[in-house]
Image (cartoon, rainbow, N blue to C red):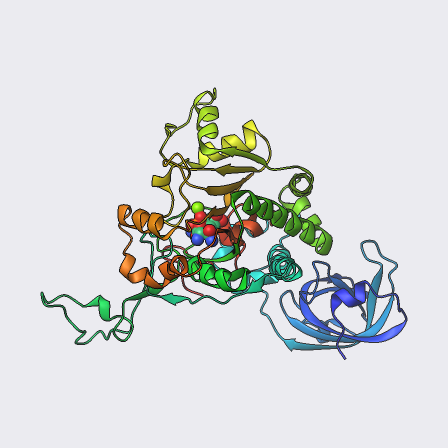
Length: 466
Ligand code: 4AD
Ligand code: MG
């Protein structure tokens, strides 16, 4: 049976026959002995396969090139060489899949030459998981996803699956992708002769969800504590290193929580996830730290060890107004903060994660609970160094009357959200929740600088080839 590279590298049982399969990273050596570095994705580390040239002359090994797939039988032994504790002395090598090294785009370049850039790798997203970097990122992405389920499951939250095709706009921001079944030929028309998009989904207007929150609230008002974890879509023409058109979001929603409880949960949750990654993926994180960002591990430990700074939007505006730094965008009470403002607060002023609360009602979504002053809402944004907003959430308006009034003021169609309003009609209760952008979390934990490099197949304007 095949052993994984990870299992062999950490094995205490030496001097035994093993079978390993994987992709060749490099082959080097001389006329006496050849060294083949094999990786099967189970770990960042390669397994060294040693091939005696008497048994494996060049004619036999000619197809063992970078990128080819091999199956190796041999003896697992202690290694004499530097850089690994064990190696496999090959007795049989079979090439399962050849690779023409002349055209394989992921070559390990010689000393002094630049490796292939992250930008170039984006053009070959179908092959980039074969690199060390994407192997590490994808293993971390998996580990964080697993940690999220672990965290909630251990605390009595239920995982709820919310729909991807919906008839509503959860954020009321109008950034939706239309879902349509209308035929190109002879589509239904409105009275004035235009395509009748209200017939999109066999007779109903539909779009891809921007958030599972509204359905999550319904579930929380029945099951108490729930979370969603699924793909969400935003049809905004954003070309930034922090935005995707398709991203994954985690949205816990808790009955009987107020804003303070919501902040406590968000902070504990983020610290847990960073710790979880540090404990489970030390080799991948060390590699990313050494390769891209020497401060990565320090930054991760810092987040775990320090309280997040909590302050209101109004307090933040005061700090920004008296800042010596000149901003490109002016700071004015009532306007949304720009990323330069968020960065100033997190990276220059407080030098730690920040939770901003009680934003002006006009720049936040309709469902947030109005504060006593009638001007602000019980919103919270968690801001992280190098990332900006990683979490957005709020206490929800539980009063039917106030919610209906907010919807009217903000032109949110109440008739389409009758089912949502029913939660306020029947046994309403204080409740709160938030949304964590999964890719922004992965971005922070891996230290990558572009969100397109932490999801296997990024979706951004004009990019949907793979
Ligand atoms: O702040 P947002 O829009 O909040 C909501 O959708 C609420 N329904 C959440 C809730 O209260 N249940 O999005 C939440 C988070 C952001 O803080 C950010 O991390 C991420 O989702 N996010 C994006 N990530 C990548 N690309 C985009 N275009 C994103 N838009 C939001
Ligand atoms: Mg937000």
